[in-house]
Length: 147
Image (tube, rainbow, N blue to C red; front, side):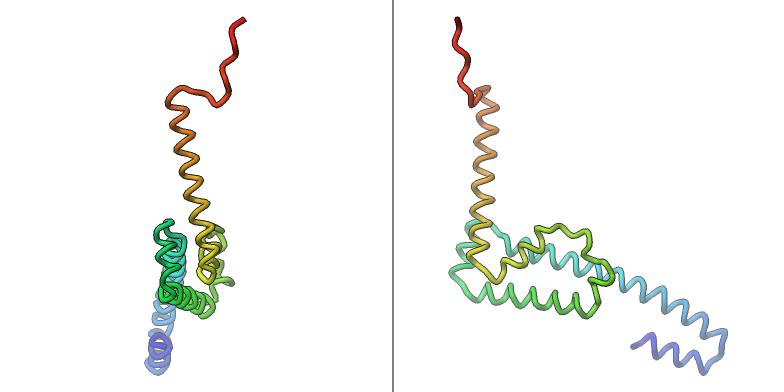
């Protein structure tokens, strides 16, 4: 709105001033557009990290419906911002990691978050066990018997 006001004021001032104001306004609005896109991407990443959480955080989240409501409201606010800025048409989220969208979708379903957190926890335990076996020099297959 401020840019519109400046442009209208420049129209009364003269054509030389108008072209300068139009150019400056376009540059400023383009910068703001890019910054809005980065703000949306950063907000979605941060909220996705909160939604995923660790297994202990998921238990806390299940015990407090207030946390679930707050996360859901934050996600709705980001979706409203996304719609207001026409983020889909601008392509702001084209290269976004699909896991972010999955994590944001799990906000409304605490049980889905529990499954995701438990799955990530089991994967970490399995990876640690596998690394420990490799570092001991042991193989999961039995050694061949000598003839």
